[in-house]
Image 1 (cartoon, one colour):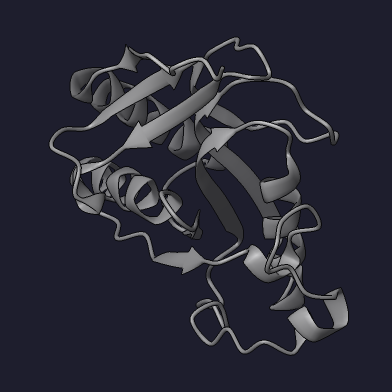
Image 2 (cartoon, one colour; image 1 turned 180 degrees about the vertical axis):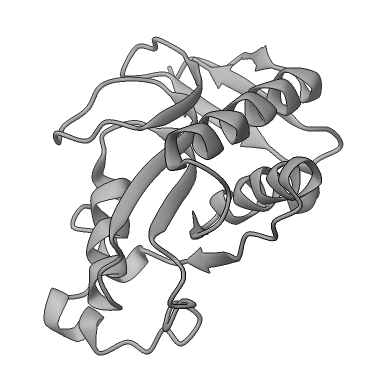
Length: 185
């Protein structure tokens, strides 16, 4: 008999907002300002989180940060739908190239970091479309259990989990009633 997954809220909408404002400050501080940044949101929830970070920076710094989505499915090595890397390189991604020449740092944004495989796939996809001077990784939740040597530069919250547990990010942009992050398991 399969156990029922009971959700436990680990972040409210206010918690998410505060974490993203803090992370937006960290990004600007580490970069030495807001100029020369571009956010790449890893599909599915990364683009919405990246947009929120960009909006927070623009409100404070007066600098508009470009935000583009990135579908890493073709670059995954552990999921159905992945294709071989040579074929993936041939997939057009005009929304990724070219960035404005003033962009020196690409900030990859995702909702949850778990094994590191999505971040690795995103790096592969990004490099297939040009090499920025620097790449940084931002995640709303770092839950541990890495299978690859991937470490985020900025984290909204660290949430230790059991491998069998799941974290679900619910965003208004995706039709959720409210913003929240829940732990299922």
